[in-house]
Length: 364
Image (cartoon, rainbow, N blue to C red; front, side):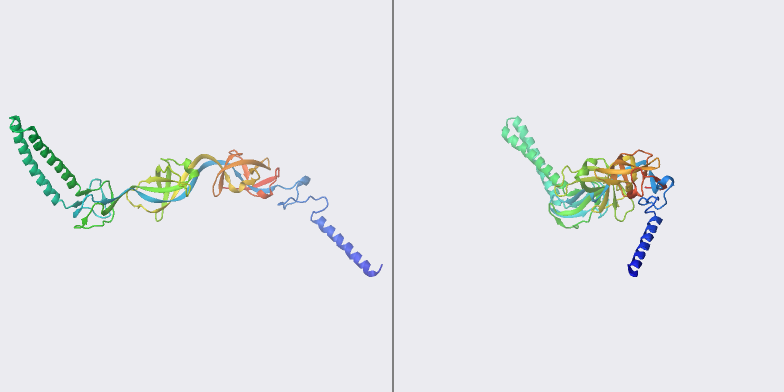
């Protein structure tokens, strides 16, 4: 054996000794136990691993509302386009644009001179017919005329009566009144204009209360009924506007699979205008005593979910059933009780029966 071979053997032996020393020094061999994943401290007495430091949370009940937000739009409670039923020249406009009017208020008058003249003519003709019928009645009683002549004269009086009533109806149509209380829009005619039946004159809207129309997915429709409460927000307005559901469409939209609802909100000052975009907050369900835990405590697994509970200094997994999920909290329906302490950190390192030490507390 030459000196080079001896040198290589000596160097190899020294390397093996160095490796053994390193393994022994850091606990990979020998009597010192290997540390569990996540444990950095040295083993305790009796060779037991030190407790894993975690954070906890004490389960308690609280109020929980299941809400969704959908877009909607404001609409007036009533809206009508004022038009004329007869043709004629506008004699007077008696409303102001943008002002509130009461039901029955006179908005417009159409020139009625021709109708009044025709009525006066019929009144005169009726009086003459009444005199003729009166004389013929006396002659008929004395057998001076036939019954037919008397009946024709009496029928003429009735005919004039009917024509006068018809003219009274036409005269009534020359005065256009507000069908309900509301706010006037912008007029589309001027005094002296000639209007025909159906000619748009002005719009009238009732905006107190203001209505909000919105649609929600079909699957939530059973949780929302007439009389339920919602709220909505408007751009440029602070806070929420409370509203009460007053109607729902009995049909499901086949294209969107949604159902349309309508809610009403007080609007005495008229500051909310129809046609505005709204964000509607719909409360589907509300729980007064829901068990709420931080979302990070819930561990999904095959076939369900579990949460680690702190019991006698150890972590014990408990299968749970969850409900409504929020940003930071989730509802637990089954598996936990009020007062249970659950673990919210070190989740990936926890094992059933592992010793743990709670160093802090989580909050919602």
